[in-house]
Amino acid sequence: MKKAMMLISLLLSVSAFAETRKVTLVNYETDGVKQWLPGTIMAKKGDDIEITLINNAPSGIHGFIIPAFGVKKEVLKGKTEVVKFKADKEGLFEMKCHLHPAHVGGQIFIMP
Image (tube, rainbow, N blue to C red; front, side):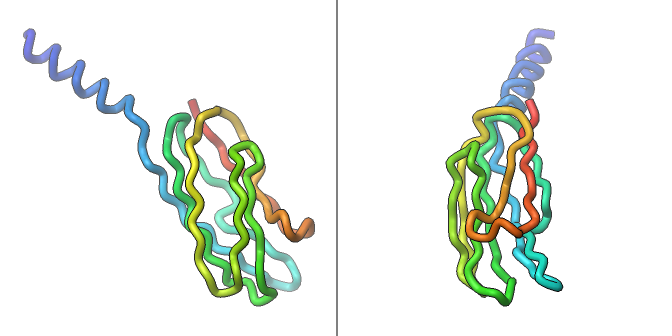
């Protein structure tokens, strides 16, 4: 019984550790509409987030920001960039291109 309780305690403590959430977003453009896809991503509070940004839009450089987490990056046409941050707060936060206001924005949902 004591061994079983220790094992359960160990399993619960391991599941409490933060994970690294890796996501790839691709910028596309069609009929003048530009967007990073997928438009919504999710993670848990405490997770390390790693977002790979691929710019496939033919119109050139595009930006990517998540103001709530201090993330800001420019991605050249045909290039890939990576941003990393800690999901240290819960809620629904804006993601968008800071270079083109006409971009369709997205969101990141950080769960408890």
